[in-house]
Image (tube, rainbow, N blue to C red; front, side, top):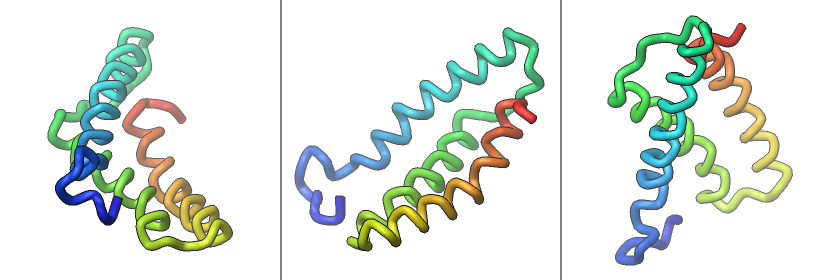
Length: 92
């Protein structure tokens, strides 16, 4: 990821965000149809949040941390972001 400039993987995180964005919006629509009180979120807002989240998830790997640190840091990222994702999706 840190040495992908000029390759087909150069925009990997951005492409991954866009793929996840489509799936997330489908999930929110489904939850809304089932009566869950989801938050109204524009495509742009979701893109920004997913970019922040997925970039944070890949940071320990990009910086070549050892497995122990990667697991610790990813747990921290999950604890930080999960309450927000659950609120957006209307899950308590």
